[in-house]
Structures are given as structure tokens and as C-alpha cells.
Image 1 (tube, rainbow, N blue to C red):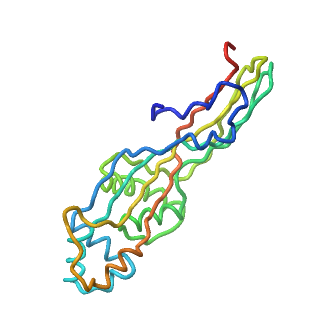
Image 2 (spheres, rainbow, N blue to C red; image 1 turned 120 degrees about the vertical axis):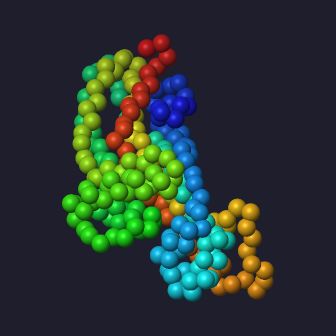
Length: 223
């Protein structure tokens, strides 16, 4: 499967394996990057448990640990149906993409940016700054749009043998996890308390639907 297209149907028979269709889509990594000690220290200063550490100890932690930022994409199944034929199939589907205020705040906090406003105007203003910041953190192109809703018109000539129709949407997933910095080791026993804090630090993952959809179809062999 090419990453720029959603997965094909499984099997040749119309109507077969429709319940497994969503499972055929697997995420792929477009970029990953590890933060330098300076940026790691800035991000740790916003994390509960690390923010209370003395300055010197926080610097030592930042030299030992790092944040791994990862940008992955995946095709998400929005809708699928088997249609009997012959027929002219028409349907309208609602598609949403982008992020609202809640995810915008989550993206800002995960990137270590200050959040000092709310509302649609702030979300629209913040999208450009967040796009630039996340592109830098992941070393990839990240576009963060404000939440938008539109419709997708579907129309197909269904042959006598019937047709399976699926509508897919691309999703971007931005993930941040705390890891041991490459070629570094934890302090010898007894381990400092911040090690337990590091283990308990949750992985942050934000899913963003993208303004890109694809429809796929399957008909009986030879039709």
C-alpha cells in the first residue's frame, strides 16, 4: 500500500471482510526528533514533579533524559457500505478536520508554549504559531488548522454485482514521550526520586483530522 492512498479492500468478493476494513490501515512515521538538553529542561519545567526540582538537579535530569517527538499519519475509516446493484448511488457525508480550543490548548502545553487566552479568535491566531513550533519539534511539516466542517458528495454507478464503498480521512498524530537520552545512563543506586517521576510521566498524543479524504470501491471481478 502506498501511504498517499488508503488500504484496498480485503478479498475479491463484494461484501466480504467489511468488518475488518478499518484494521487494514496502519500508521506510518513521517518524522521523529529528540530534544536537546536546553529544550528538554524548558519542557520539564512545565511537568508536574519536575517543576519543583532545584535548578541544578533539573539541568542534570535534562542532560540524562530527552523528549521524543514523533509525527505519524494514518488513514481513518469514516464510513463503509455494501450497495446492491444495479443502481445509481448518491450520498452526502459530513467531514470534520482541524482542532478546536481544547486540542489547541493541549498542543500548546505539550509544546511548552504559554496559554493565556481562549475563544475562536485565539484558536485561529494560535494555529500558525503552533504549526511552526510543532514543525520545528518534529523536524517535519505540520499544519494545524482550526476546526472546520464540510460535506463530501459521493456518487457511483453500481453494477449488477453490487459495490463496496468506503470513505477514508487522513489523520496526523503528534506524540511526545519522555525517554532516556541516547548514550546516557541513569545514576547508580539508590536511584533519585525523579526516576519514578519520569516513569510516571504520561505519553502525550494528539490526533488531528486532516483536510484530505479518499473514497475506495470494490466490485465483483470483471465488472
